[in-house]
Length: 507
Image 1 (tube, rainbow, N blue to C red):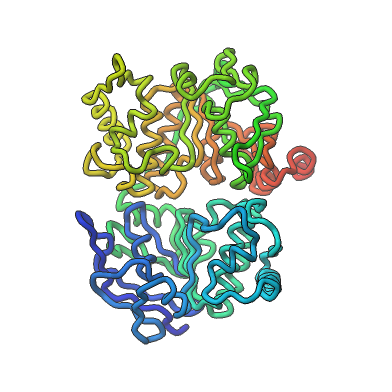
Image 2 (tube, helix red, strand yellow):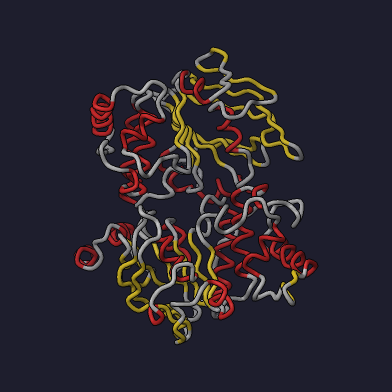
């Protein structure tokens, strides 16, 4: 048995109106990969923030190798050997890899010496990285390497990882897992948070499961099924999304040679994209983050105007129309970034419902907002999509990420689109909420809506898509039937080896 590295006993943290963590206890041993599982709002984020010194517990205690461990700041946590790779990267696009790494270090060496150390550590752990490259030019997988290398340079005893594979191709996931196994064999403990339960089964030695802030179970992920773990997380039988087989109808959305320059200097411009999406069809679009997903959603929603004929809805050229005009015609979209793009953080849920629903829900008359109707629309979203919130008057930022995601997706679905485009519909959402969102998208398709799902979750795309295409450097592969596609074929499509090499795999 390995020695206990971190021991947590009775950790409790309460906020006004909610107990985020209630008497949480578990241990992590040296060299152990320990999964922390739970649905959105279960208390995972608060717990790791206490371990990393971002939040002070109200009660309970932690020990590190038997000694009291009470980090008042992340600096104190790092000094004790705890490092954390966050779900959202904290990197500056305009700085080099080495400059970004230096910003995260307590006492950074000179740039030349640091660059040498970055090369040494990145090669040792199989994560090749050029310290002189601009971060803005890196893929999502390479950006994650920067965050990991920054942690590894601190020689951590405990590495906390929050949803580390959400932006990686299957091949990059394999590389990451090899790195984590190497760290594990060197005695580093890893506390691993992910909603991808098959990954948990592959990688982790033990799992602690939280529900409503309390530890409700522990299990061995290698013997428990993904479904069993998901049902422990939600405390109920999990619904598997389904729909009846049905032939797609007429072409609803057609793109013809769509090329749009990115508004972001570090973004990816769209290059000659051509596709058709039919009534009742779900088209899944995969790809590593940063290959034109945001730009494609902007071009489809009307935020980024294009050549008029490049985007057609039911044969009508709409490429020059803005978002409101496209919404009026039934082309709706939900972007990836929840706070700031899909929802205004400090506005209430009622106000956020109005932001996109004013036209199709007729929430404005003679220039005046119809408050009762707007509130009623927000309440319908909350009820239909099980959004956990005290009420429609609460600010968007008060919701957990998963609940806000349910609100954002529900807001668009309830407006009865004829074509819906969503980017990362279940990103960071627990198994139960993800199943509900996917079922809602399948129900839309069953009603004859053309649905485009842009996602980095390949399991999701394979579960709900009729056809699959991949974005790479702003180019879209030829869509292929999703049924029967292998992970290797998908990985090649995502890497840009669309036709020749995929055909080679088939043969």
